Length: 143
Ligand SMILES: [Zn+2]
Image 1 (tube, rainbow, N blue to C red):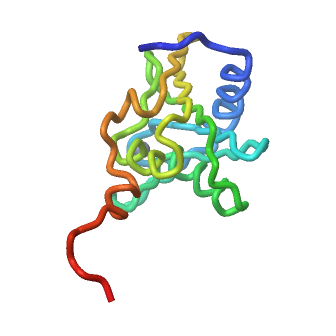
Image 2: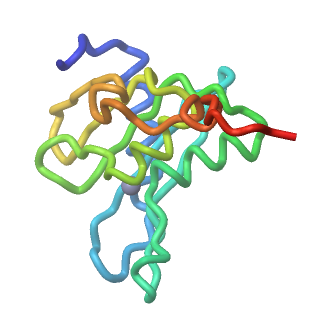
């Protein structure tokens, strides 16, 4: 369910849009910028494609990795801005990647127009596989 859009959402989206032009996209020409808000700081990322297509990295994961590299794993929000007419949603791999850090994080999505969508990550990816599953007692003895 879309959420009310705040000034903070639009500010984070502006950081995503700011770096979108730096995307490395010789194959798709689909530029995506992302901005993560964590620890009171902003971390940006762009999509980086590769001739071995599977080695491509999305903007959302690039931005999250910048935050984590700086020592911030408590990601409160991420904004993503793509070359699409409608607000660009994170791909499935990015939804799973981000759920590791906070399944309830705010996801702000924009595109080429002024249209903006805001959702919680657990609305985009219900029932994510998270750390808790690995911590469950398997019933086997551990030494
Ligand atoms: Zn992705």
